[in-house]
Image 1 (spheres, one colour):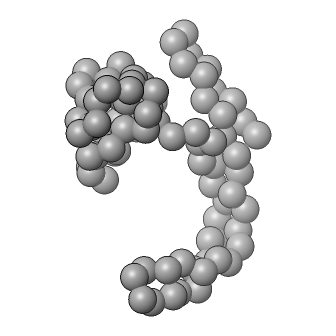
Image 2 (cartoon, rainbow, N blue to C red):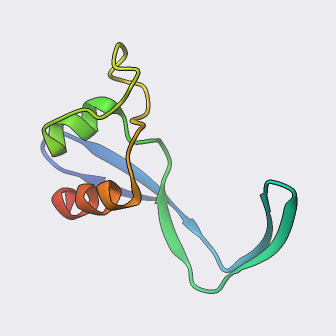
Amino acid sequence: MTSLTNPKFHFNFVEIKPNFFYMRNYDHISLVQITKPFEIQTTPVTQRLYKEIMGYNPSYFKNKPDNPVEMVSWYDCQDFIKKLN
């Protein structure tokens, strides 16, 4: 497990090793291969964290800032990662 800490936040990551898994898409099942290892955060991005980094909270359900952020696009995620780095 890898950790990343900045003055306000602490993140834990786990390594995902190359392997195979089955992915379901509605009524279709595909065998997927992970060819290169990568790391993924162990917890979801919260609304609080997203707002701190991006300056706004796009979530529909905003009453609990420790809930995962939602209503974000792939492009929003890319912007978030750039600002976080």
